[in-house]
Length: 212
Image 1 (cartoon, helix red, strand yellow):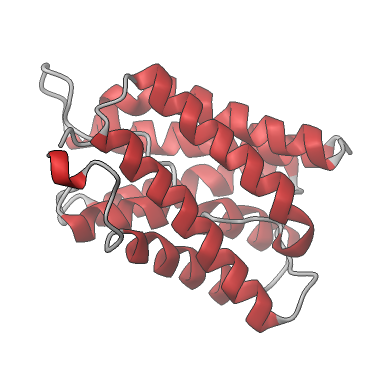
Image 2: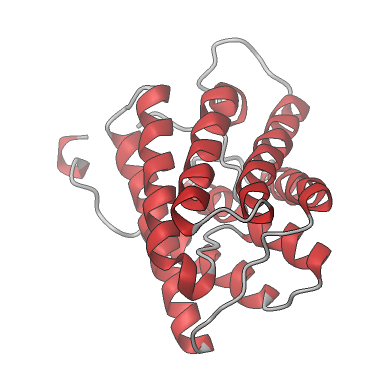
């Protein structure tokens, strides 16, 4: 299986990878939450988040894997596709990137409009679906463009369908930055639930598993 990291033949230092994760997450939050600050509608916001993720993967996937999401990094580390010693740096870089972007846009906090049990269920489920789609694309040895397009579309779809219920966080860093800057809570929900969903996806057999 082709991993999402270290696919570049040229040696890259771990700091290059951390900076790529910082930059990719910064870009995603700046554009996505910027669309919220601009007052755009749900469809436009969802598409913007998808485009931001697509762009970040195109730009930074060859360097760090462009996880731009602590839940994704934790799931890959648990699966053995990211060195455990690199995981803390990835999470810190992603969180700082989101926080820096949030200080610019000062908007885009995620808050649930449903009960907390429902919000937990939604965030776990949609992050599981997102991470599973990533696993499938990686198993298929997709090109960077196909990977970026597939993940970007999935982010847009899930954001549009579930955004009105929980904000469709799916990403602890994406929530951490805006919610801290705007003074919103529910951090445990938006940090723990996506991680649970992403890790659970590791245990779901893929359609190509028997062929690999």
